Amino acid sequence: MSNYNEMWRSLGLNMEAHDRLLQALPPTYHDVYLTQPNRPQGLEYFDFVVNEIHGLRIQELQEHKQNGGKVIGAFCVFVPEEIVRAAGGICIGLCSGIDIGAAEAEKVLPRNICPLIKSFMGFKLAKICPYFESCDMVVGETTCDGKKKAFEILNDYVPVHVMETPQMKRGRDRELWLEEVRDFARLVEETTGNRLTTETLAKSIREVNGKRRALRRLAELRKNDPAPISGLDSLLIEQIAMYDDVERFTGKVNELCDELDKKVQTGEGVFPSGTPRVIVTGTPMAIPNWKVPHLIETSGAVIVAEELCTGLRYFENEVAEDAGAMDAMLENVAARYLGVNCAVFTPNTGRMERLVQLVREYNADGVIHCALSFCDPYAVEANRVEKVLKEENIPLLKIETGYDQEDAGQLKTRIEAFIEMLG
Ligand code: BJ8
Image (cartoon, rainbow, N blue to C red; front, side):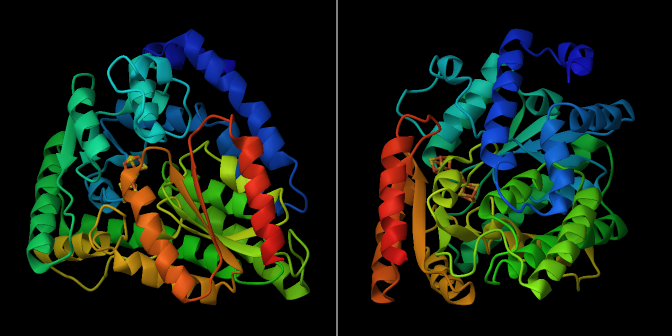
């Protein structure tokens, strides 16, 4: 990837630190991904995307900018991608899944804070992420307190627009959120210099829904036993969904699903039939955070679904396509996003109900709740998850962990014991 050096320099990256990141990624990817047995061929495209993670896609973003386009970065699945696309912009999820800039981040943040927050601050302060450096604007949200306050600091380094996400889902909260979505649409128009039209927004809604449908098709295939694709590979695809070109990505996921359809018909899978099936739930697993799924799938179980924002919460609900007028379309967009069951909502009963349904639908044997360290919303909500699953006699393992590997041995022992109990 060294032929991109000029581009990275022009983005103002700290080349030394960036090199260290690029050197760390391929061996990890090899050990976690390329050693998996029976991988479908259609994954070649996604391997290629990871291989080119700071290369080709960044080049595409630069070309887009040279042609007058804007890039808008987001940290949360609440940011409406269809609005950015409808105004000719590109919306990318900023990853925050590695602790590489922690030392820089700790200059402005407390040590004991969620690793996801520390990660994005570290990426920006240490200047190691070409996605971050490509952004014309970053969109934050008032989900958890840590993020909300961190965006005030981040705003010193990059323009940040914060959307007020409600904490409840009553009528007045829906109105507040709709106002936020309308404000966001106006801001996107100002930033891109392009007006939203009913045609561009309708097209963009269809395209983003198309991406969600392809991901749902993939999720449906995982209901089969044997599972035709590993949880690790599915997670990777869900992570790539956040920053890849929407139409190309949708096409590649559908191609992969065509291949998996055939595998299901012939009874081929990545693990033997009867392998214990688990659902992972909790905080998002941003690329390249593959630690817990790797431990699970090398301990004798297969992950069949992710009740995560890097998973079902990202693609389960669609924006209704039935509106003709701009205001009705924005209402449909706002309504879709409030269907996300994030732990910052109180009460968040929708998440518990969905989790129980998912266990039945995916024929799962148990659930692993994985919260990032210092994440209060998910760590506390784990108690509600435990209560509901206990009532339904669904086995649960609760984990809290960060991005470092120090606890990997200890976690593996706990995960193995849980899977043995399921088996
Ligand atoms: S919709 S889950 S992507 S907020 S892990 S930073 S909550 S302390 S990420 Fe999230 Fe949107 Fe909700 Fe999804 Fe805070 Fe917890 Fe850290 Fe978190």
